[in-house]
Figure 1 (cartoon, rainbow, N blue to C red):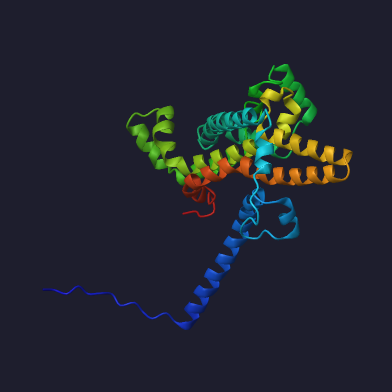
Figure 2 (tube, rainbow, N blue to C red; figure 1 turned 180 degrees about the horizontal axis):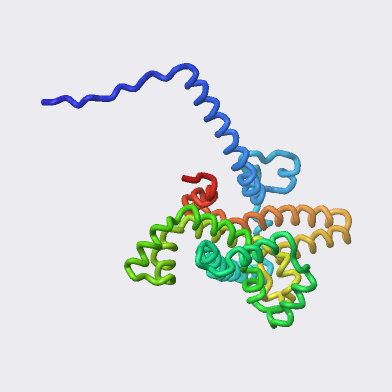
Length: 301
């Protein structure tokens, strides 16, 4: 019987061992520096504020407490605001992709009349905007003020996302595919939906994640354009609760002020966990495409 030849591995030199040790050591330290603040917020949300303030909480809660979550979940508009945020994020992300991705692809077509001027019109708003008052008046005149659509439609167009997606299409989608599709009798729309989009999962994931995170963390637009409490997103509600607790602390003294300060601190940690948990759960599923998309334009053939 023939014996399989096993490839002998060359012994690792001392310099390679030192290099690997340094690389793995630095990588481990960086990972800990990123993970530990997130872990500390989680354990602090379940800990006594006095233990957190005294530095007794490091890796595990010294004394478990759910008071921050109890006070937070007792707010009558919490779940309504949570639903609003989810709706704004999902609808806003889908609408943003629907608006920005076709525009980005259209700007890559050489047969587009006035392509350079259209691109310039998208670049100018990145540096110069009309200002808060004109935008507010336009939003009011279109009847979007104090409606769910004010969080989705007016701010869907993102020039930065369009430029990033356009760069991806230019660098990753060869022109030969369009020529081959034309030979087969494919139309522009059919080529875009059946060939371009399936090959652009990476940039779709990146633009979608950027848009979703931006909408999820947004509270300023809701503060300006929404006055109905039933339409407010989660971030705005949490901000109002924290401001209310701080205002009560300034109006009270003694043991009552101390208790309010501790409750406010626990609510802060609990609100961070509640507001960031969905994004943290979604990100691992998009990490593969996100790592590919952020390198758009970095490496050229």
